[in-house]
Amino acid sequence: MQGGARSTLDVVAEQTNLSAGSDIFVYWREVPVVPEPGPDVPFVESFEVTASASADGSGGVTGEQIFTRIKQLELRGKLIQASLRDIRPKVPITAWATATATGMSDSPTDDYRNMVRVDDKGRSVMFVDLQTWAPGQAEPDCRRGAKCAAEGRCTGREGVCVATSDADCAATTACRSEGACSAGDGACVAASQADCAKSELCKDLKGGEFCDLDKQRCQRVTDLSRFVPASEADCRRSKGCETSGLCGFRGGRCIATIDADCRKSTFCQTFGQCRKKADKCVALSKQD
Image (cartoon, rainbow, N blue to C red):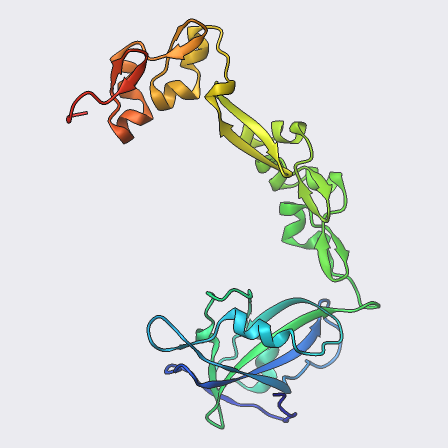
């Protein structure tokens, strides 16, 4: 149910004994993505949620509960982000504009009970900023934001920052680390094997390791069935040597030839496969 407007709303304490089934009044305000000049938008409308039962037996308030009610509101613009305001007890209402904002998710496991307060009427209350965007409003200055350098989201479009050019993506940390060097559907993605080859993820591949492009993401995988060694040197530089002790070369493939290679392998440390038998490293005793 919607609450009516009130000129003041005083927070007197943190809610420390919230119990399941308690009513919580969630006060909300709609604010543009790009703040407009003028007085701070007041919290005058509210909806109610019922505290859920938490694992410890007390009451909780999940992001899913709050977002379920937010979706029922008639907002003037498209919802971009919801944030909880950390309104401190006994702080003048004029100082609320500077209260810390915490981004919310709609997850059923994210519990925001620590943001519940008690007002001067003894009610449990919370405060939510709803950032929205509507046609005619200013776009965010994305090029100054952290996501421009990190993810290539340098262009404002309908209130959100998106990636629109390969040049912006190529300059990102995501390109250097993961191969996300091309713009696609508003984000930086790996569009080719060449994108993957430039990434730190795909540097210094050992024999038997490959950098595959799968669903616009680079993946470093080990597939010894695709590895074709030409010499023992190839085998000794391979992933199979490191993990399984297959460091020797015979008949066009890598095999185990000495116990010393087996003992250096990951499988020796993990599974006790520390001795050579036939062409493999195996566990021959309880001590292994």
